[in-house]
Length: 293
Image 1 (cartoon, helix red, strand yellow):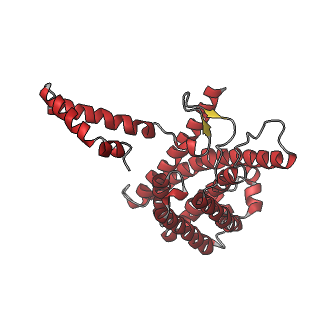
Image 2 (cartoon, helix red, strand yellow):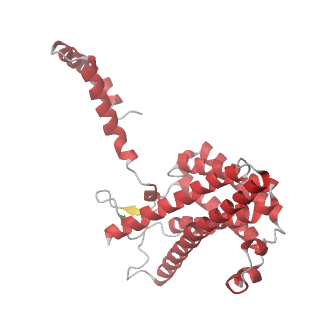
């Protein structure tokens, strides 16, 4: 649907007479092309300026800063069903991830300096791996069939495709499983709380305002705290650490094979994209809040 299609149909004769007048007054094809280009720019410029964080935060349209609270979410059958699907399906994924780690080693890492690799047991790797791939494929198909179930279908579909191919590598390289499956999927904890902020706070209450009913206040505060905590730990700390580890492994493999064109040449650029995106989203969020304050 074009915003001006109805007007053109109603005023077809008027448009024809205006065009004829413009031609008699010396309008050239170059001028008409410039006018059409300006019209297209006016139509698409607002969407180009739209920030991805507007899907999950209240944003001042004029100042382009993040406001307290989350956006109000009206009842929307497709999105509500998709959110419910994610909240339910992600829980087994998180549990399976937890079951693949030795938590005694993880808890004592600063003391005994055990590596993250030693803490990975992989006892439930294949169940965990197949479940992850099932989740991403199922969610991708859902979004393709019902794109209005999310606010940014193209971005999410691109993310899912990259993730599916990224996670094919550790299937054939067991030494990379703790990085590219276990630690990599730690971000799902943050994803769960990201969706929870929307599902359990549809009214968009700011978490730190006074006067909310006690149950709602506690619920909103806990979800908000855990959301920001998991965001910082997974996206801003774990992912960059994993990138350093992958680069070091790439260097070792390059020295061993006498060529940089090995599996590291694939996974390092892919993981770098995830790191850059995480820092970009973190920067957008932090800078918008600083401007608001």
